[in-house]
Image 1 (cartoon, rainbow, N blue to C red):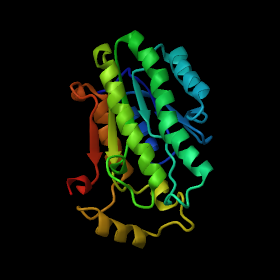
Image 2: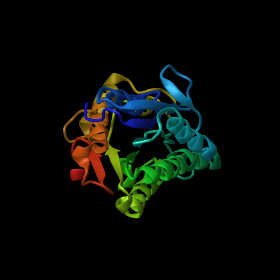
Image 3: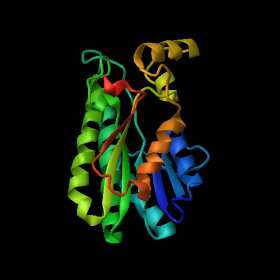
Length: 240
């Protein structure tokens, strides 16, 4: 129960890595408010993180209910699988609004509260493609690169206020986004296994819990000297 009495918001908590993170934070003792655009069981904060008013209201609700906010995890994200000519304006803007603006708006709202407390931990979801180009994913890779530098900049700005800001950078993870989002036909298990064999050094896809466990670590005092870190969890991909 390393996070007993801690109050957390997790965005993108309805599925995938966000859902796994919310569950493992709860198992570690935290009180978790899940945020998502999807109205599903367990989601306490329903709305779009690209709307700054929703982000401000989400933090305000956490504080109204529990008196503080100790943890923010920004797992909400969308993906477009296309090169530049095939990426229309709406797709580009949606990538930036959710992946970049949404992360910034949630961080800004949380930091306003955390600096009053003198403490807090924020974990953003970056990507291996935030530090390297993503062929056929130009908008997504660009957005995640922005999240990486947003994380570093926030860490520098607020290090002396007791607020730690880090990012987890997953590789290929077996989630609904990987299987289906932005694809005409969802990938089969055989196609996923082939992808892992071709792309990932250890030969398999990550499971959402494997990423979530690193997120939980970054939220605990065990990571008390870590801020501004971009932590790859990618089966060895970034080693090459």
